[in-house]
Image (cartoon, helix red, strand yellow):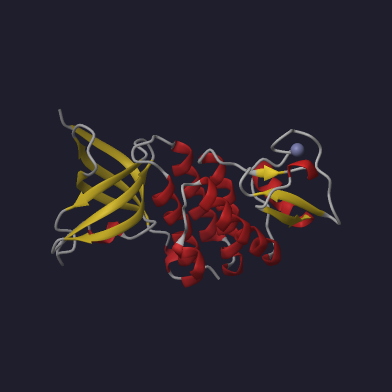
Amino acid sequence: MTNIIRCRGLILKTTPFKESSLIASVLTDISGKVQLLAKGVRRPKSKICGAMEPFNLDEIIYYKREFKEMYNLSDAVVIDDFEQIRNVPKKVNAALVLCEFYNKTVPPEDVNAEAFSLLLNFLKTLEKSDTTDARSLAVGFLVKALSGSGVMPHLENCVCCRGPVAKNNGKIEFSISAGGIVCHRHHDDTVVFLKRPTFDALKNIYSQEWHRIDSETSGEIEGFLVDYMYVHLNHTRLNTLKYLK
Ligand SMILES: [Zn+2]
């Protein structure tokens, strides 16, 4: 049986396929992440071509048969191309970080409306923000996204024994492998020392709508995130992080 699916989707990544087609990875609002084959869209007269740019929000129609790795795209119309991001290279790089994150970490067709709304919220926030905030916004939303991926760091008490955690010279021990802050007894080889403002910023990201992070703190969180995602998200490395400025 073939179902026609009409949904909203954010384009995460596209890859050229054969002479004139594209394979698009799309995060949708109702079907999770899907791979869509867009036949003939790289031909000059294609109507759909402009809709397939990364981080576009589109209305999408595709045909779904039984579970397959890929479905055929029937139509795509741009709802928002986030022009205020697209015209600013630093914002583009920030947007691509979150797109790569979701492309690499969301399992196919795992219906996760939270991922879609967080990415959409990020793009809307990034569009309105100062260019100088693009990097810290991307880092903050990456931290937020860990929660939806089921790997939110444990920041309340020792992740191993739930005991109190001492603050050594204002620094807090965070075990990358255990996934949270630790007491002295549960110190391990993967412990990093988080400065107090970094720890507070991490907590704020989960407790408030949005908390602006200064660039020094954002840099520290970024360093910590690289190792954290590698350990907790199946060896995920984000290539786009190196272009984040
Ligand atoms: Zn402990």
